[in-house]
Each structure stands twice: as structure tokens, then as C-alpha cells.
Length: 466
Image (tube, rainbow, N blue to C red):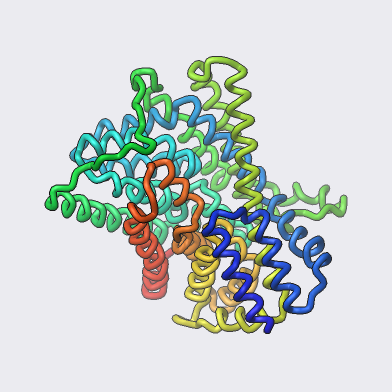
């Protein structure tokens, strides 16, 4: 009965998320449904378990969500993000339309701009380029997704996206973990994805299909001469990357700086400095990027009032993102506390393919990312539930936690892009298309991302490289 309650709860959460209902509201509802079917009292399960874990997540990652959203909004409103996207797309031209859009997405996301901002920044130029090149618009969402939602989200070492940051808090790693495997996986996903999209483009051209007659959300390209130059626009992105690298890999953090706070008997986010270096480094890097974006893009905002509007919009926008993920984390921890989950976790931990925890980790993170429709949410639930067990297993066989980090990060970006994923829904809405029009090619990328996780596990098993 308890296992049935957990499975019913998971199904209902996925169904309601797919139907567009807020996870913030319904994650606790279905968590408490599972708790009640296991005989737990509802109110303590809500206030002492669900909320306690959700708040712990917010405490750990809210600064990154807040500053990332503000940075992205400033890059959008100042025109700096569009300046970069326009320069890349224009320079490669219509003959390399798909490649140029993918590269634009990669540059922006690797520089710290949020996935959602990248969609809005790239779409106007990408749509115009597809129309000029007579490429079916239905291929556009998958093209943007390949650039923004794949390699530079969770594969390439050093990416400042949250999907690459979360594992650092659990494994004591940094965002450059397993760099060779990350580069192999990211390069393979981008290469195979472009090959697939080019195949689809050629097939459409052979069938005489062009851009199509579209009227929904067709962009109007304003005077692009007013956009900042790409040389100026890219400086905040470079600042984020350079400062982040410096503070993570070159700066020596004093392990004793937490001691005064331990003496205060505070509920610390991490027991040691090593667990939060990546978060602290990214906070400093994003503050630097925000300051530089304000300086370089202020004239494009036009007034202090517009600057305040951008900063406020970014701050408010961050609340929805982190509350969604925190609710999913709270949900996962309620489920993990139930006795019925022991059989489920035992089944997942019993996946011993290759004699390591990697396949177990990849399967678990993929499943939960798919159920929640969220890479960060699904991974956070999985790591909250089982990271200690995976790490202990890895330590027992002499496996580096770096590979645990990279597998968790890449697996989170696997099945997360199922139809109920918020980024997919937003992307299709921005492009003025439907799931029926364009989801098929996005799903191909989803399968490709999922399979690539197991490819890098195989490569690591055969070679031992990181």
C-alpha cells in the first residue's frame, strides 16, 4: 500500500505539472497524500519535513538563483545578449543557419545567461534567419534547445548554470569536475544534434517544404544598428567565467573562516569550506558580471528608472524558479522518509552494472528529472535522497567524486525535457508553435542527451579518465 501511495503521488505530480498546474502548490499536496497513505500525520509531515527541506535548499542556492536571474535580465534589457546573438548569426549567415543559432545559444549559456533569457534573445534573429534560408520554422525550437539546453547547461566543465553547481554541494567537487568526460559528452551531443537537424532540413528541402506560413508571435526585427557590438557585449560573460575560474581554482580559501560561525551554533549550509567554494565563487563572479553589464549597457536602458525595473524584474523572476525547485526538493524528502521508499531505493541501489554507483545514479536522476520535468529539481531530489550512499559506494572502490558530479549533472539534462518541462513549454510559446509542430525533434535531443550519459560512463569504465 505504501509503495502504491508513492507511485500514485509521483504520477499525479507529473500529470498536474504536464497540465500546467504550479508545482509550488501541488508538490506538497501530493507529498502529503503519500505520507497519509503511509500512516504519517499530515501537519508534522508538512511543517517539519517538507518545509524544513525546502527551506534548506533555498538557504543553499537562493543567491545563485537571484544573481543569475538579475544578470540574465540585465543582459536582455541592455541588448547585450542580443548583440552577441545577432553577431554570431549574421557572421555565419543563412548557409550555416542551424550552426550559428546553436553556437549563439552555447556562448550565452556558458557565459552565465539563464536558459530562458537565451530563448528570448535568440528567437527574433533565428526566426528571421530561418525564413531567409527557407528552413521550416518547426525545426527552430529544437535548434535553440540544442544550443541552450544541452552541452553548456550540464556537460562542459566550468559552466555556471545551476545544473552544474548543485552536485558540488553534495560531493565536495567544483564546477570543473571530470573535464575530459564533460567535453567528450558535450561535443558529441552538439555534433550529433547538428547532424540530426541538418538531416531534417535537407529532407524538408527535398520535399519542397519551406519556412511555412506562420502568424503567431512572428518577430519584428528592429534596427540592429542600435545593438551593442559583440566585443562590448561579451565582456560581462567573460568576466563571469574568468572571476569564477580564479576564485574556484586559483584563490586559496582559508578553511578556518567558518570557525567563528560554528562557534555561534548556527545551522550552517555546509560543514566545510570545500563544500561551498563553488557557490561562493559563482556569487562573486555574478556580482562582477552584473556590475559590468550595468556599466556597459546603462545607456541602452535610458534611465535609472529602467535600471531599477530590470533589477526588480530579475529579482522577482528568481523567486518562481527557486520556489519551484525547493518544492520539488521538499516533495522528494517526504517521499524518502516513507518506509515504502526503502524498497524503491534498494532497487535503485541494486543496479550494479559495472560494479560502480554510476548507472544507479544516472537512472535515478534521469527518472526524477523526467517525473518533475525539471533538471535541477529532479537532480536535487535524487542527490538529497541518495548522494551519501553513492559517495560511500564510490569511496569504497576508490572512485573519484568528480565522475559522480558529472554523471549527475548530465543525467539531470536527459529526460528533463519531456513535454511538461517548463523550458520546453516556454520555448514553444515564444516560437509560436505547438508540441504537435515541433516536439518530435526536441524528443530526439532528449533521447540523445539521455544516452550520452551512459556513453561517458562506459568510456570512464574502459579508460578511467575524468
